[in-house]
Length: 255
Length: 258
Image (cartoon, rainbow over the protein chains, first blue to last red):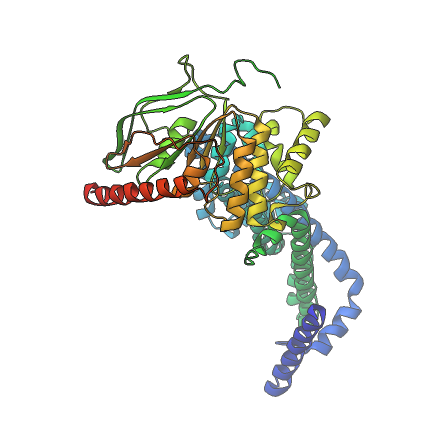
């Protein structure tokens, strides 16, 4: 049923796209129709997949690094109140600088290769992950903490056995947001300066007025992002089965 | 079971306890004694400070004055188990892992003896075969049974209970009251409740807390041993008496409150 609906939505969007092209008679170098794009895709499949692999690697590494750094920072800030006073303002200020504005600097410092794009993706992911996880760590059910204190738990063990597991649903929403924005970081990095990747390929195609090829790259990027999002979502659901159970437990108790 | 200083049920003494909340004294120079190995029930209108008093004894109320000690004047840290109105089960742990939580929080390795004991306690509260179920799969009554097993697993001589049965339906509550009375016999227990019949069923003595700042009435001591039969005529007469006192306390509290 779900797969059928997804297919129907996809077909509907393709139809609407073709309808706009047919009805307005727009030039193919402004908006190519789906058939033209599909042909361009088939003609450039090898090159497209090679560039997609580069962009995919950048996104995956950025996601991994950003989530890791975000988790470590959130745990540090949540477990040492003095760290909170010093680190939180830095975090907020760092987010006030638009990450896109940093892209040229990152390319200057880290070069045209993989590193500057991974850094972009990491930077853009770091804040949502840190903020969501920290929020979860701060909002532990007070009753659980009272119980843990009467049981004689140390601060570290309370963090490990209660506060961190309790914050995992919040962390997983942060990771979902991060997964959705990670491709932005990688592609912006490629636009500013690179020698490979879908963003680079799109700029090249655009420069040569191969708009149908550019749209083929855009389509592939969109498919990759959607596939990534749904795989991460499925993994998170698998990792936290009790979250779904908990949300579904609002059924009235037997009388 | 070892019968040394840490497991023997002591009496609990609280002297000159004071708490100020939002500029008004909740209680002031309050004295309380929980007799050793007996169940004391604390009744009173909502908002009078019953839960605060229980939390003070548990060491969970940092803003208050006064410290609960045993007959020798030593602190109670490490000798208290706490059972709240919410079951406070961790939703990501199975019933068995919830029961053995205390050991993990203290860094004790969960060896086979501890696991066997936890399984035994779950069986004792009527949950044999449900060890691997997460709380979401259990009914409210079952969850509170797991919480009771977790409290028993701690094996502390003092047990503080804050309206542990109030969110349950009447039949489940009735069953759990009897089970708790049986399991907690011989421990020094403080049970905070708003149900006079529950207090009379389970308490060796019943205290009424009322007024602002709150005071404690002279203890009422029902005859016989808990758990008492709720159909007993004497008990019903006492319940009527308690209801009268509580109504009076509520009126006083209403006029005395800011």
